[in-house]
Image 1 (cartoon, rainbow, N blue to C red):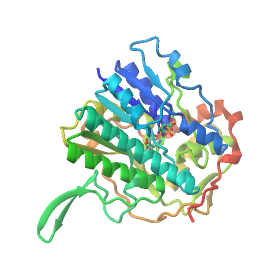
Image 2 (cartoon, rainbow, N blue to C red):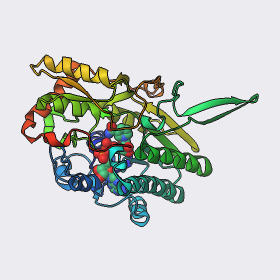
Image 3 (tube, rainbow, N blue to C red):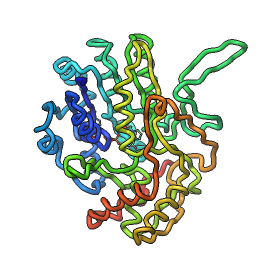
Length: 381
Ligand SMILES: NC(=O)c1ccc[n+]([C@@H]2O[C@H](COP(=O)([O-])OP(=O)(O)OC[C@H]3O[C@@H](n4cnc5c(N)ncnc54)[C@H](O)[C@@H]3O)[C@@H](O)[C@H]2O)c1
């Protein structure tokens, strides 16, 4: 059992990880500055269900096992983050505390800079503090598959071997993002690689695909519930399609719908965290895992939602709308993702049962769906 510091614990993945790792018996300290809630309010984008803040949510799980220490602090504040790390001496830090929305980062100069500043500074702070205090602490950082973009060659897991003029070397796989958010994640990866090779840190970078699904424990539904967003700025595509279907409005496919990405169920995200916790990198080693389980085009996802929800009497239309993003709509995509399976991930595959489960949750809250916040308003051009 480990002492773990979770940064960004109020978020979609942070809260699900907090509950799971607490149940596993780890000693947790959790931090969030509620900036995601603040920006969602500012932009009039409420999640499907507005959950209580961490202190209230914790009352239902804190009675069991270890007490969880909780801080309403900003990870971009070096002094305050350092004080927390000094006090609680984590053996592992799991860093979710970023602004993770591509449309948010492309909305205007203010949110674009906020995304870059927040994400790079929080990652810099974690790496620099760990270098100062305890380089043996394992940093687990959430990256994204979006860092790689859509190159016309296979996407390797983090690294590319290059033979140039008869000599060989290995480099970070080339990255080329298509939003400022994804660009901030590329800079994060570079920073982590810098600190790993210069200061012998131990780092895992999880290059994750878009996450879908719920983290609701049926035996204990309330405390496990994670924020579920479906709007044009903060929502992810599959969750949004399911909400559109339940609300009786067409699923909006951006552009041709041939854009392919790798996706992962939130339950597998948690298992990947567990697996990387048990696989601490050697000192001076940056482990990179491509963290997704299946590739789909947007058209395939839309069809899967339509066919699956038809089974429970929901009839859905699919409509193509002009793509608000600048991205390749027809491209090669073959991303490797075997490293995480090698250390033990048993993937949860996306099928109609998973989609219907999510839809049942959404149906329970159907009256709260705000149809006005679904169609894309942020344009890249
Ligand atoms: N959800 C996905 O589909 C997905 C896919 C790939 C990668 N990721 C990565 O996973 C991580 C978590 O994603 P998520 O979906 O849970 O996001 P989220 O927005 O739901 O959660 C992030 C949390 O971090 C907090 N936070 C942000 N900046 C902070 C700061 N400076 N100090 C303290 N707290 C701060 C926010 O308030 C929020 O609660 C992000 O780094 C994201 O880039 C997510």
